[in-house]
Image 1: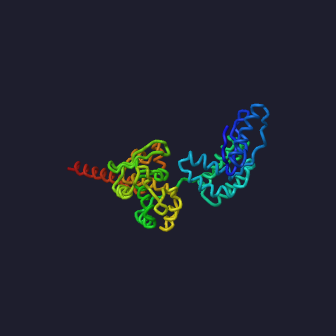
Image 2 (image 1 turned 60 degrees about the vertical axis):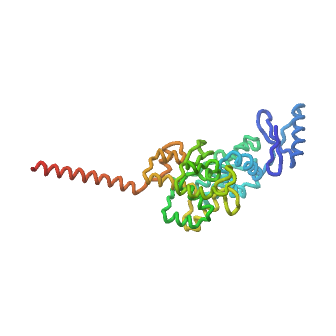
Length: 348
């Protein structure tokens, strides 16, 4: 048995008849401890009766979910924070035990009219997991979102910026975020990897970045090119500890929690269409392919688990198509010349 805080209330976490349940214990930890002691006494005497299901509000449960699950177990908890900005106003004041399936379907319809299907699916997945966890904890009988279907998502439109667009974007960024972009374009690191990068994983002598806590749970090592070395060498000055984060928000003086707001502000200032920060990885990979780097090497630098993932991730370069077909012209011309020379040779 234990005590867990959900919003402004404390709940008793226990097993009854082999099933895990949570019961409200009071508004203070002391009240909950007293209730827990009484529950144990009743359990020994055989006089404990399961009370009616508690009315935990969705808003309070979401707070507990963020604190005890998202922030502790997810690599990018900021995604959940952004999602809750939209989820909480819709469900927040409803008891989680009284959320019907049709209400979830209404939310999906509402959000589908406002954002892209992939965004709706991310928010729906959070709701599904939250309520599934609440079911396991005994807070609700069944998960009403279990059978809610995700929306079909069209293929991702990859964005590769031209040199002119890169210059515009860099000019639109403050210095502290410009450094982040240069690092992203020259390393292919994921957003979460950049946010968590500390100096102990940057070897400027051997010019290697050791990437840990990756999406695939496999470390990888990325060489530091001249452009990235210049940025990192400048940022290293004044660093006090190897545990310090590499990228600091100079406006706040603290490590970044997210790139979301500053990224889209910079795109708007530069007059560029909105696209996710993750596309910096696509830019890195597609440029390597365009320069003739083999896909196996690109796969290892990006940290993909399979070559098929790399092939799906990178779009084909139209100019490479033209070059491939042009090679047939050269072959045909050579064959035609050989044939003509053979004719003249035979005529002699």
